[in-house]
Amino acid sequence: MKQGGAPSTGKWQGSATGGVTSPDAVVLPDPRARFAATAARLASLAPGNPMEDWLSFMARLALAQQQAVEAVWDILGATPATVDQAIDARMPPLAADGHRRDPAWRMALVRILYEIEAGPLPARARAVTAELRAAGPAAIEALAEHFLRGDVGIEEAGPALYVAAALQVYFTTLAAKLPAGKLRPLEQPGLCPCCGSTPSAGLVTATGKTPGIRYLHCSLCSTAWVHVRATCITCEDTRSVALEGIEGDTGLVKAETCNACHTYSKVIYQKQDMKADPYADDLASLGIDILVAEAGWSRHAPNPLLLVA
Image 1 (cartoon, rainbow, N blue to C red):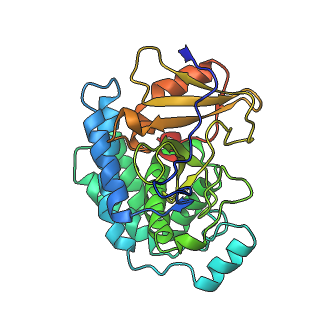
Image 2 (cartoon, rainbow, N blue to C red; image 1 turned 120 degrees about the vertical axis):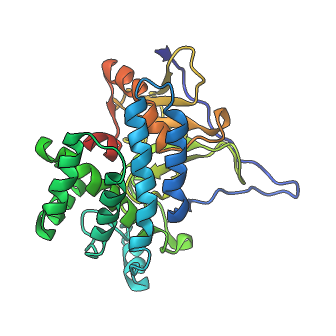
């Protein structure tokens, strides 16, 4: 593992006419593109990878999520009054641990199971999907609560993978309906301003109005929001942050470590590969997680699909 010094910082870029161009503080997801992009990226990363079979399966799962978007497309979003009340209180409008889910989210789960079962599955995996199909609404909702509250048991890990995937579709679709211009960062800027969840990874942009900006990408609702570089997303420390990478690789994915709270988060550098996807490249860079964990740091928050898979 390559030891890094203090990470480089992004710079604001002035326009030709003077003034400063500000980045969009919050970027809402496009549900009809988000999962398709992740599926395509995973499919391109899988061949020749030591985790080829697993990455190929995750590509199939992301494609199933894409198909499931239509199942929840017409669900009503949060009311303007609810959004305004949450924003005034510096709370996420779609708080994952308090949001009253529309039961229609389970239609996304049904569609995901249908798409996954249409392809090849090991007998054990097919038994998991059959178990979910046989479960009643109460059991499925209980599993959803366990996932959203971070207390999935080992015996629930298989079914929880598909429940997590369906909840991602549901929350991503709802987040897309929020008024982006009203949303503000939370008091804890390392959490999603839409649903309060933790990010899967951060991506440092190479294009757009302000290249070099770090956006954190929500692990649940796919919203992206600006977070200052060279600042720990867990404790906001700036003095003991460093970058760790694998010696000799492209430098596409690095771990930003913090010696103040002993956590790390993934940082993906778009300039190294314009096709980089914060969700796919997080899954494909599991080797960095292993090396950094062995060196004594704990991940800020796990990728939810990686956690239950």
